[in-house]
Image (cartoon, rainbow, N blue to C red):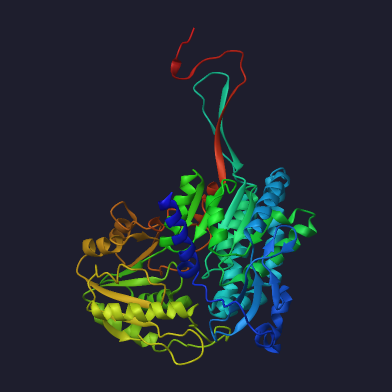
Length: 540
């Protein structure tokens, strides 16, 4: 009992302080809200106001704590959201399960048509929604728009899947019998997303879960509540237009209390959680304790390996994009650059030069390539990691300091000279720090790639086709994403996204990820007048 209570308290703290890094203060004078300034009047095109309801299950509500969302680029308040209470969570779950009774009876291709309409509704709002992602999360504008585009692409993909999903008819060993697989929806899919992709990760889950016949309950990150509200308004309008229950896609903004309730709730048939490995482990244990189903997308300590025969004109832009993009706040960000000793100095010099040319500025400025970290806490983590790297023998080649301007800006940083197994190298810090390592041979490089606890994304740069297939093979990378001559980040939606080991093992988006959202039944049908038993058993 004490152990369970301790874990619950720890999860409360982790949800509140680590995974989501809540920087939302609870009061903000109305006159200071960005939404009231003419420059940000476009926020109202998304149905946002000074005060917003953070609960939706067919009707809007919110009786819980009022939080203020802040812009990472200037730490100014944007608008407020009233979160869910646990009683509102309970009501939302009940209405979601009632809505499932309607949704599950709709044929899959018809469900696909609704998802198609959701994609079209997002297309109409792609610019303004992308601007909100940029404003509230801090990623640059083109990445914000790209994130909305990813949801749209997954909707398109799901529409096709709605006419294709199903199981095989298998040969039966018994005369007059049919053997087949039947796939059915799991029911209610809970979706907990993180701050760094406040639209796309929900989209991956939502579109596929819907065409599979499930209803969804979304809890976005507490530090990006306006994005959660805006997306839900877009989806809700589509459901309302089709005279469908709004609780098919419900939402509860909240913190650790709501997240813990979802993890422990047996009525949540599948819980998809995206966040840190630390919190994901506790979530997984809670779900497993009730023998629930989970889909975990957790941390990544991703590496690019550059061999002596690599095309450096591909290496340099790939490494810069993968390490600097989203200010180092992607789960697929390159954190380790493992260079062959013969090209080490050349590559470091070229990447350092490129780093110094990265355009830093307001994320909504179209010319900006690099914006702020999401929270002040992330800035502190960045500074702490730089100091630890120095203590462990690292040399800062460029960066390493906070930028003197409003907002949560830090310099993209390159650190060399560390041992491959230095503690800081094996620690995933969600900031733009690139650790550069020097290796001698292929076996050593592959081993270094695999020695970290996470197993999300990896890439090598080489022209040796034998090496390529060794990298893809059983003794190569142990990650869920294994690339050649491209960065670790920027995955396409057509492939399954996810990783191994402490990354959680879940798969989302493409390939056969739809199976995560369904339960499989093996069905034997006897259409004869005989009753033969399998394996030739006689029971007479």
